Image (spheres, rainbow, N blue to C red):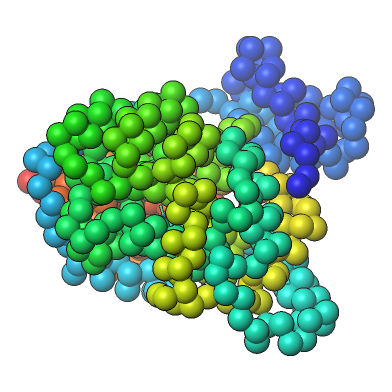
Length: 478
Ligand SMILES: Cc1ncc(COP(=O)(O)O)c(C=O)c1O
């Protein structure tokens, strides 16, 4: 695993960042030229350029033609964060399958501006390197790709994943890792292991629609607790539900909830783990976005606070390395054998070639360096998208400022229907995810989720401008 020491360009970027934050450099002030900075910081010109591009990406400075780099003026308009919805009566309700089918179909439309997805652009994946490793694997082991690696999965890949868990404060034993077909596979296998049909599962509101569908199709019920874009999972609501309801499991997304992007702080994670494991409720943690933090450190896994062995941590390479590889994992000291058994009876195994390639990719280093670049790029994309929403959407709009992940949660003026916007935007070939699909009770009528994982381009800006006009029209037409 590569070390976390800052790279040279990061040192330079931090120097400028600290001068901006302590006021030594003010808005619209010219920052030292590339050459001057290269001399002062005793680094190469190309390192300074890399640092300045990074600062530009995260919205701190801007290049002015023929003139140099300047401290960017703060956004003219900063929108407030969306509000959490109080959880209503804890009665499970069916989710809007028809709407979800339409959302899935929209994701398949290659002619759409894909603001509806929750993924990074495949152009960012380390594809060249993965392809080279794939050729290497096929050359070294020509017969391996056709052989089956039964659960728990490829040993070296499990070792690499166990090692990376230390970065989330929760080192793992490779024997406790089960390779799965992505995070959703890991979650559904875990639910099958820990729950019985009819059990109630605690989830956040809002939460990922795929999770709600999986719960429904496993004949489980849901009870929701609020997740606030600013403060994360509501601990007191978890406590109240744990007191009043017999729970089979909880499925939680403390690191960059999809859709609202919130990060639940460590103290809250600790308390939630204590409350739920104190009632012997297994926690299935969806940590798919944990590696995509915009700040300096990776947030903790809930396993870091667990002494009981009841937390199962799930993740995958879908948001970071390659969505199409369909490789993920479940990590659990207590349930790994049962999860491996469930994997075998439900779909036998995971693809061999992808496991071998990923094991080599992690083993050969460079993933952390790659991630640093991706994170800086995504932080920049999200700032651009937030600024465009502030500029083009009408009064009454609110937008989350997530500290990580690939999506933005947007609250629209009260009378605007996100599902109607989904349809009208589709007619203009723009994809958006309507808020109603992110709750079992079809709450969030006037919310949408927009992607911030795509490279910032004029096409994207025009799409957000168009959405802003559509929303303004709908807000006026009471
Ligand atoms: C929160 C969350 N969990 C799980 C998934 C599915 O992940 P995977 O591709 O690893 O199965 C997604 C995909 O969008 C997601 O956003």
